[in-house]
Image (cartoon, rainbow, N blue to C red; front, side, top):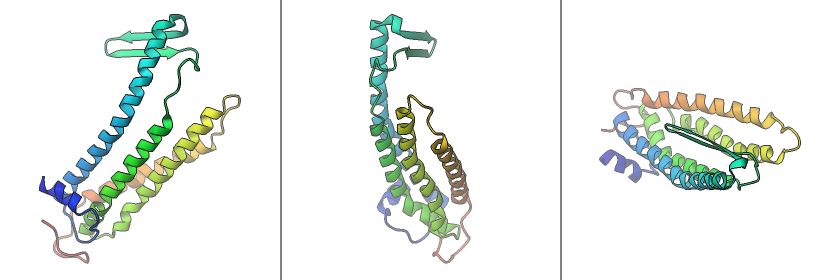
Length: 195
């Protein structure tokens, strides 16, 4: 517990080193909090849409197909304008805020962990660049797809987003590998090892 609290206390401390045992408990708590925060926004939003679709299907059985089984329930509405689409801007905003807070909460800890392996903190930036690009492009792509009802939407933005996300995953996996590596034994240019 003290390593987790220490991580929160050192949010602006980009100097020094952190061993794996100090970094990972804090990082996992931050990631769990981010997912809980996103779920707190998305679950009520999607539950409302699902409840509206279920009520519409019950009131208009000829306009909907309901399929259910053990552990499975699906409602397909045949008239796409029968129920309102959820406010995806709220979802995109929630995901963006959760991602930004996660990056802010992890930045100093990632830097200190990279310092422990003898690397500069800048090694943590590539995933952030591609994450930000993806978060900015995805709502634009969704808007483009929703507005292009009469004609087929251009796939350029889709392929750009796909390539961006692929590079993001590669950068993130590379960063995770760096964060898992053993720290340098004894002092390095970033100081002495932490406890």
